[in-house]
Image (cartoon, rainbow, N blue to C red; front, side, top):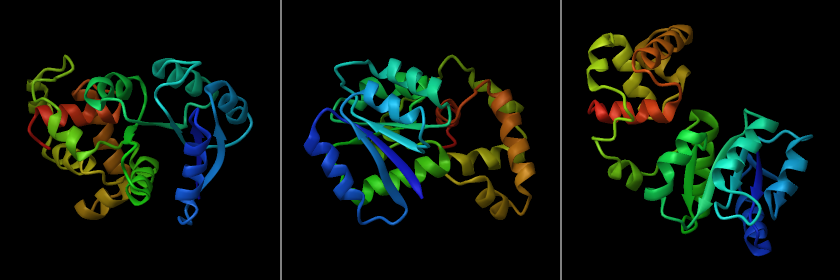
Length: 209
């Protein structure tokens, strides 16, 4: 069961989330709050897998929200649910620790799929945002680092950027999960990245996705 907490200042939106997910057996909305301070009180003493928050809150900025939640529990996955322009905000907030953005226009099935992907793969990038990522956006990581990757590391990298889990990659490549994890750690070190979003952007820079 994936435990979800919601932050949104509008009661109708909070009720809507609970109604949306009532049809999904693997998703449980365990808490809804009007502001971050209310949510923090719950998070301090209750397990939550994913926090979905409106980006515009009266009591906190998105970056500070990420920092405060991570102080309480660094394992919580944070997603912003908003109608703000993701082209402007996505990259800084993904680098700050958010794992995805969901438009307020998506239906429940799309949202449920995104939640499962975030819970499993620790990243969710919409197709339209993926298409808008510039190949020139190298995040100060040189392209020639690609040449240091082994053929196996490149294979693992391609599967990771497709959203596959370690166990799935191991099955595809007929290797064990420990080997997959070793290759992932090595290529992240070689490409000088420390999170999956930077890895994704690097892979796009290298024309692998």
